[in-house]
Length: 141
Image 1 (cartoon, rainbow, N blue to C red):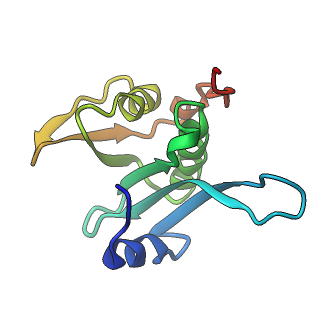
Image 2: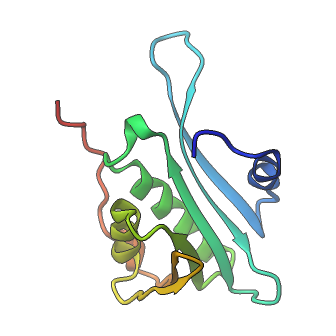
């Protein structure tokens, strides 16, 4: 998605630290330079489902497939468990293999159903599930 709508930007920025949480990552290209946004993982607790939240992870194109999404998702999972969440719901494009791999690392039993052209996963947040190592890897030249 090349540009976020105003509504989507408002939703992403609307956090309260309990029901709506976001964790971001930034890079600093050189000493004294301003940080550059690298990725964000966020969840929104679903109304009427106290232990379930919608989850999303986004990483800038230049840093994809290097492990950053996994690091963000692992930390977000830890925070979610601390807040009583037991399940994440994620909507994923069927061709988004990196995100599907992340979901399977978190919950190998997660099986999607198709909804409006997207795979929708319900991901169990079991106590040890997010301990799988997700190292940040340098991109091959």
